[in-house]
Image 1 (cartoon, rainbow, N blue to C red):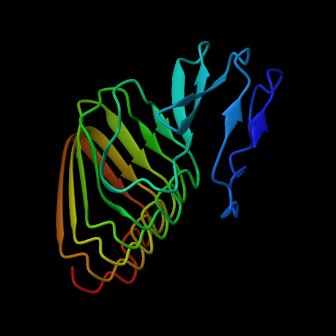
Image 2: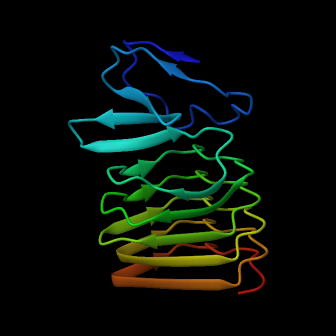
Length: 178
């Protein structure tokens, strides 16, 4: 896939079903998209957002969200089979979008330690069959519908929010060990 200099925005579901997409190039004159360490990044200076739109298929082990990233886009880590943990101490991350880490079969743990608000989108970590531990510390937390549904290994959840936590319906649907 080649992103031309004229492209300014992609639809939220742009990479849904793009299971064979392995390589993305961005025209060097594009002011909105870039490739950093094989990740497709979208930056909007007006809204001060910096979003991961696509991660490399071969990503493995622990992934630490870089400082400066404000969002993780829909389907951006979908079905990445070798990722085992996701961590963030970023002061800028505020949204993990719907289906971001959907079907990451070997994902075992999540750890977010932040001083801001954090919203976890619908189904963003669902169907992570080995996910067993969630540790979230933040100012404010919203967990959307089915965020962690169908995570059969989930046994440990530690949530500490300084102001409030909102759990939407069925956030932990079919997580029978909690």
